[in-house]
Length: 421
Image (cartoon, rainbow, N blue to C red; front, side):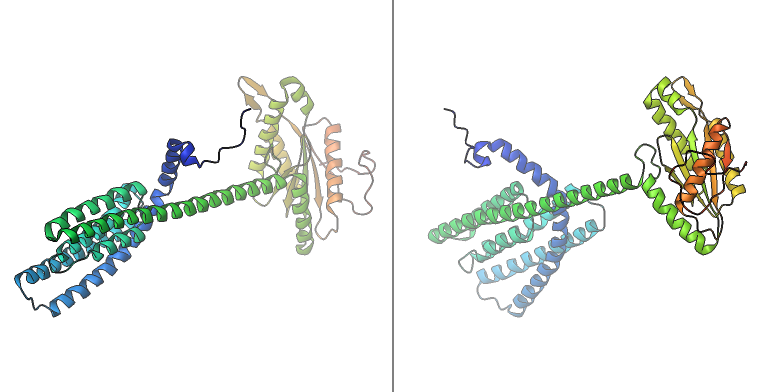
């Protein structure tokens, strides 16, 4: 029977090439961020190392009494290395500062970070090699390798190349200055151990920070996606998805607020109800996609003609409603007629088809100081629209807004008297 249990071997054993490719892709994603991070570290490390070099030079100069010729040669060489190291880090620190003030460039930023790490380990290797003239031990090189692996974020492949090269240079250099074969063998073994430890420490630090950076990036993307979804839901909650106009709920909220403001400031508020004429004929003749285009085109015309303070909403299939603050009846009727003419003169053009569009308009104005509710204005506008349909369509009618008990239906014109416009 086939064993259906998942393999207990880790991915790097089951599919090593796939694992390495995935690891390389992750390292590439964070390389730019880590390169900029290294520039900050290099700028700080340069100042610190220059300070250490200065103190060391002062100590050496204060104790300049050289004994024999070998000690004098050691003393002079150490001072030269200190000067070279200080000069190199001063230059690298200034370059890092310069790069941080400019847009990121991966090759330049990454190269500067590697140059800083290479300068540190090579100079400490030089110190250890020269120290063999007067003492035994390579602690300076070990410290340099460990410090470089902890200060700089070095990509694993680069860490292997850098630290192995430094280890080889150190081993060859030690063979030139250390004459005691036993001590040389011990020091070279220490270099190999320090080299491996530096590679391991650097790779672990890179991997740990890479995982954290990828998690932070994933969280940022998740938060951005959630924020986008939230914004989309908020838009859908307020707007009609086809035309982009306010939906009935949002229009009701805004209209009720506007009526409260109008009553407080003693200003009139106009409502204009728009209904496309013979819209069912459009759908039956050219199909619902064309009907959707007619609705969107109508919405664009209404929004283009409205003022910034006006609110345009889609409250039904082909029914739209406008809220016009601080507008009396004459201004509302003039505005509605202008919209009606624009719609009539702007047929929808789709491919080679020209689809004429007209609409009927019902105007209702809540007078200043009126305590009429939105329902009263809606009933009046609907009644005016009904009258416009009865009188032949493609026209504007208006009706007075009456307060009092709200009727159960709006089917009869006797319940809602009209006044001709």
